[in-house]
Length: 418
Ligand SMILES: C[S@@+](CC[C@H](N)C(=O)[O-])C[C@H]1O[C@@H](n2cnc3c(N)ncnc32)[C@H](O)[C@@H]1O
Image 1 (tube, rainbow, N blue to C red):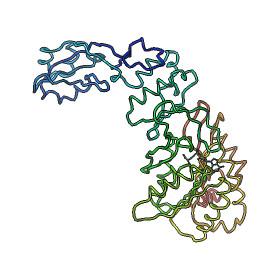
Image 2: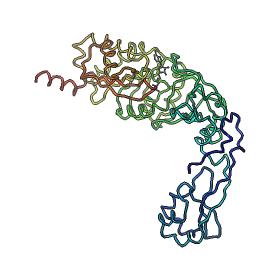
Image 3: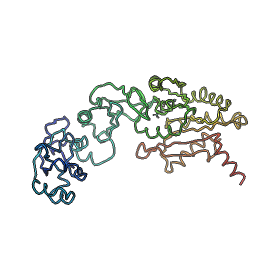
């Protein structure tokens, strides 16, 4: 039912739950228990939060409240469920019910409170768009919605029992560690959260590290490409959303983040997700990404290439979209030395490097920037994928670069000989 809150709550900045009480008129019928099974009945029931739409009248007779948006007359019911015509004829009538604060959804309450002009823009940030991270509900409210921030937070605390803390992002992310300043709007000020993603458990201080639940699909997409024993290097690993699940199912992981808090929580998360009785090897670092690539990842890759273990691949992950593409100069330099030795290498290397693009033609924009930093790869070794829109004119893109990939190289040879 499209229930609207009483108009008197419009513009409310301090929550008065009593103001939401109103009486509405709804249709009802009385039917025997055995008629309750009808599937069509579900479509006409009055469904509101914390509202019982079925009442016992006698041991085997029920009173059913119906949705007034769907049912106005007896015929509306009989057309849909002819088998209960007899009971509809006998009992159809209207009843007044009292609706309270408990019977509205968060969206209905916020829409009712905020001035109409703030609700026009359906875009996020007007109080109805929030992310859930463990016990925290995280808003990124528009400036003109800020006078309502405390009431919005209180409504969320009231309506979502597992939410204990409501926070608002204060500024755009601009710190090196990609975390943002938070304002606690309501509830417990504890920002250490536990949450699940990709079948792994994570714990971290949301105020001190980067964590974005909107990236979960991207994390899963990459994790699905991995196989047990693959070698994974994560240059900007955060608290481990790519690498903790990867290690859990058997990849050998080298993970790094420049933020000491990420390093601390990554350690916690790796330990916590270790499968019982099988200690996986993993190596964690707290370095600048370039240094990690130069001193840890590339020497390890050379070592494993020389060992020549077959049937595994090497994956390098670089999710720091504002900067990571510039780290590829390290790879460019590395590719240009010992070329003959590298031609013998058997293990394919896949780099997934994320970047932002505002260009008219996103792919062309990213390709041009990549070619300047990494001139020693051919176009057929690279593909580009849209990940998500992060702002009206700003997309996150994934660059996938493949080296020593037999299939790509065979195709290349074939094309040259044709
Ligand atoms: C966008 S977050 C991604 C975190 C995680 N990989 C994910 O997908 O959620 C980028 C991470 O890079 C880290 N970072 C920033 N500058 C860095 C640098 N120069 N070297 C290594 N890590 C860096 C930040 O601390 C942050 O955790």
